[in-house]
Image (cartoon, rainbow, N blue to C red; front, side, top):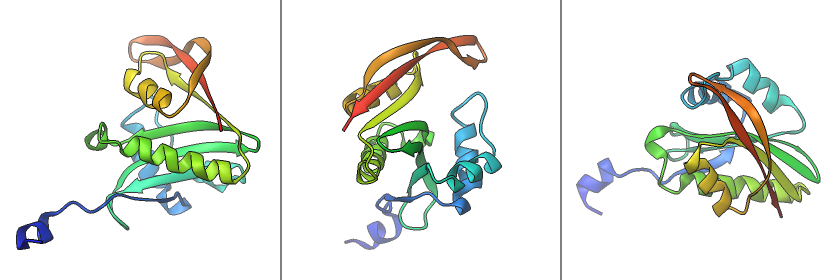
Length: 160
């Protein structure tokens, strides 16, 4: 290892359980990806619930937040409530790695089916979900409200 790489190398991403201490960071990241971001208090409430299951990926242990996924799980089913990667981390495979970790942890809790909703026009997210085994099982017309009006939501399901 050279002296330059020792000081300027990128830390290996770390995936861990989301905690209440992450709530403010989760809210900040969520606000970058959605028309109406959730507050830190909303994340605290979701993470405090018995059914709340969340994981984060950081730039190394104790590093800055790169992304998160949060589900509501009542075995045998769960629903992904939100998944967000920061803009600089998209397209690097971290979202798939985070989602795979999350789904593995849900399966360990007895979950056998995972549902989610995704904006019909969000091609990168839909591609990620399809790559990880989700298939479309429904559509909600005009479900999402955005700056350009209302858009449909695809309902997707993955069986374990």
